[in-house]
Each structure stands twice: as C-alpha cells, then as structure tokens.
Image 1 (cartoon, rainbow, N blue to C red):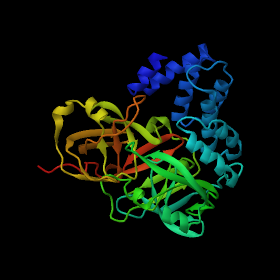
Image 2: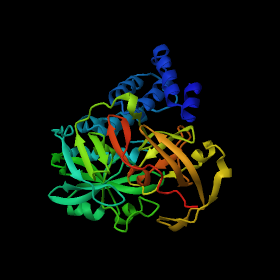
Image 3: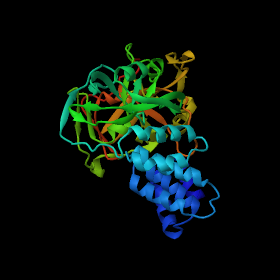
Length: 402
C-alpha cells in the first residue's frame, strides 16, 4: 500500500489507481486495500464502485485501522450524497461517532423531511443568461422566490445565506457543523430542506441545502469579488447532475442531460476535500488545480510554488489585500510570466499570488483556477470530465505591463 499512497501524495493519480487495481485483484478483502480503493473511486465520482467496496469492507472481521461505526457512517454519507436518503438513515445513525458524528446525525435527522429517493430530473436542453461581470450567476427559482445564484465549482453542496433561506422557506434547519471552502478554511453551517429548486425551467424539487450566515457567504472569495456578495450558491451536488456549459463568449449557461465527454479532448477531474480538481500543466510541470468558478483570481499554493521551475527565486512582492472574518490580510508574494495549459487552452504571461491553503498530505493541491482565466474559455463539465475551449485571446489579464 505504501507504493500507492506515495504515488497519490505526489499527485500521480493514474499510477496510484493502477497499483490499487492490481492490489484489489490479489487481496480482495485486505482492509487497507479496500479503504484506499474506496477513496480513489470516490475521487473519480464512481459511486456504485465505492459503495460496493464499502459494503465489502463492512463484512471484514476484526478491523484494525478503522472502526465498524466509521465504515457504516461512510456508507451512509455516500448514500445521502447520491440522493438515496431513505436507505442512508440507518447507516448514518450507526456511524454517529468520531469527527463526522455531527454531520451524520444532522443528515440522518433530515431524512425524515426528505423523499425516500432524490427526485429524478426530467432533462431537456436549457439556456439561461450569465449575470454578473465576475462571478457567473443565473436566476433560479427557490421555492416560489426567484433569486440570483452563483455557480460555484469550489463548493460540494449548494448554500443559501440565512436571509435567503428564510425567504425561500427552508424547513427543518438544524446545526450541521464545520465545512471547508476552497482554501481549506473551516466555518460553521446549518442544513435544511429546500422544497423546490428550478434552474432554467428544469425542476429539481426537494433537496438538502446548507445555510450559513450572510457575512460568511460574502467572504467566499478572499480576493474581494464584486461589491454585492452572493446570497445563494449552486454547488457540485447540483452541477454534477447535468452537462454544464459555461460560455462567457455568448454569456450563457447551457444545461442538458449528462453524457460522457471524449477522453481525447477533455481532462479527468477529481473530487478531493469537497473541491473539483483537474490537471494543469504550468511551465511544463504537471499540477492539480481546483476549478473554482466563485474565485475572482487564480492563485498558486505553496505546494505549487515548490514544483514550479525556479520556485522561490521567482517570487516578487505582491501588495494586494484579501478579506476574512479576522479582517483584511495582505498577500506578500506573487509569481509572474507563467504559462498554463489544460485541455484545449493555453495561457501565457500569467501572474498569480501565492496563497496558503490548508490541506492533508494525501493528495497535493497546487493552485486555484479562477474566473480571471475562465472568462476567456468555454467550460464544459460532464460526468467527471471537463473541457476548456478557447473563445478569444488567452493572454492572461493579470500580466503586468513593463
């Protein structure tokens, strides 16, 4: 197992997955092999495979590295995330122990107010206008109210501010616990039930929704963003159920039924720590970036800087300010003149601040790919893959003039 975890820690996902595929054939009931195989399937959005392996793990006698309660809780988490609410309740209650106990109890209690299974979408092609010059936003119906919602690929679950949640008559609101944003920062949240959500005329009906303080949503973009902060966010729990085309050239969002993108002209994206990450080649070095449509500026992490050719020698002062609950902070470092490539796009002359991000050592996150770059692309997301297409000049808008 050390070979697989070493490869994963270096960002070599395909190599780690290959090692685990061979290991599961040789040791189909080995505890560690099963646990890491579950994790890699979850990162690849492979719900059925991950659930099957978790159920197999629950049948292993004498578990040494994980408690049976935790296995049951993870089964419940997976069922709930994929809309199998009724089946999830037993497993969630059985897994109320350890760090995830608060989340699981809240979700289990909430299943009493949710349908037994998630509403099946009646798909039809839909287009809706992108509103807002920085964050891609669109009008959605929340219950019987129409509100502006930000498309946020950096959020696992969809979120409403407390004021909007009250206006939309979100019911059964209860404490949920700490959740992470795309920079790995933790903040508190509640969870409740939204009676209906409609996007471009497509009905999603009853679904769970996170609720946070208005000020907390205003701080999701540490670089500032627009003056009018978002009050509602569409996260990956909703976006992953569609083929989503975010087209800045025509200022439209297109939604349709999911169908796989061709591998030759798209990139595999992974789900890690609640964020969507995808491969980006930076100055000829392979890295993993969070795709964050609610981040006004792209950035490098310390891990990304360490991989960059020249590393710390390329750092120069940066005096832009960020915002947080603790007040305004100062970013003191940036890197200039980088070249980024992914899928069908290439950016030159890119300037990025270096931002600290809290993360585990299991898998590296090298940066955040934000709206400053995305607005020069057409983004297609579908079934765990993404494609970026050129829609104009791709010379970075952050290039410093000499």
